Image 1 (tube, rainbow, N blue to C red):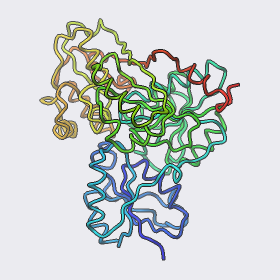
Image 2: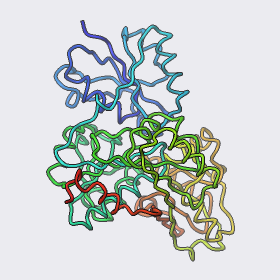
Image 3: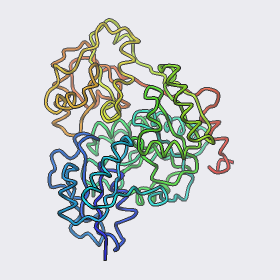
Image 4: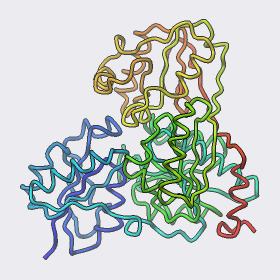
Length: 446
C-alpha cells in the first residue's frame, strides 16, 4: 500500500524532491504540494488552480499534482489522509521548521526532510557548488568569480542556477541563457534577471529549469566544470566536488539557526565570511567562532563586498533605493548595496518608499515592517512591474539607486536616472583562482 505524501514547498526545491525521490516510486502517492506566501512573493498569487503539470509529473500522475496554499495544511492532511509531510523549502529558522513539524504531527501525520544523499544528482563533470547560510550573502558574486577564474585557466565553465519556476513549468523544464536576448525572450521575472544577467554579461552560459536531471544532462554537454549558483540558502542539487559556503556577519548567528543553511555550513569545504568591510568586528568574530565550532575542517576565507556606482548621479540628490527583493524580504536584511552606495556617495536624502508604494508593493512593505529606506525590486508579473514604476514616479526622486544584480533600467521605464550598483567579492589572503588550484586534481585542472 502506498503512503500518501504532502510536500511543503516554495516552487523550487519541492519540485526537485518530487522529481528525484517520489515521481516514479509506486510506494508513495504525492497528493499535493503546498506553497507559501512568505517566500518569493508573488509567484502563485494569481493561480489558485495551479498544478504541477502531468508532463513533468510522470506516468503515475496523469492529472498532475495540485498546488495548494500552506495555510490549508491541516485541512489537506485530513482531506487526503496524509501519512507524511515532507518539508522542502529554504531560508527558514529552525524554530519555523519545528512549527511546521508540530502542525503536521498534531494532525497525526509524520514529518520528514530529505537529505543530500536522497536529492543530489551525480554529474559526469566536476562540480563547484556555491551556497550560503542565508539569502543575500553574495553567492552569485562568488559564483561569477569562480567562473571567471576557470575561464582564465582555459576551462569552460557553465553556471547552473537553482530553480525559479514562475512561468510555464513545461516550457521551463530546461532553460539555457547565453545572451541578454535569450533572457528577454523568456519574459522572465525581475528575480530571475537578478540571478542570470550578471553571469551572462560576464560571458558565461547559465542553465536553470524545473527538472534538474534534464538540466544536468544539457549542461554537461557544454561544461568542463559546472558552477552551481545556489538559491537562497538551499542545498546544492548536484553532488559537489568542492563546496563553498558564504556567511554574512551583518546577520551573525544566523549561520547556526537557519535551515538548511546550517547544513551547508557543516558540509562546506570553504566558508567565505563576506561583507567584512561594512560589518562590525563583533559580528565577524561571532561568525568565525560559530564556523570553527561547527565545521572545524572548513577553511575560513575572509572577504569584502566591494561596491561601485556612478557617484556623480547620487551626490546631493534625493534618491529612491531599490534593493534585491529576496534579500530584503524573506532574507530579513534591512538594506543592501544600494543603500550603502547612496550613503557613501552623499545622497541628500534617501526617500522612504512606504508613503509612495502602490498595490502589492504597499502590501509587501507593510508585511516586512523592517524595511524603511529601501524598496524591494519586485517584478513577478507585468502588473507588479507597473506598480514598481508607479511607486518610483510617486516618490519623485532625482535618481533611482538600484542595488539589484541586474540592469533595472532594462525593465522599468522612468524619467529619472537609474544608477546601477555593482558589487564584487574580494578575498583576503587567498584568491579564488588559488582555491581552484588547491583542488586542481578533483576538478581536472592538472
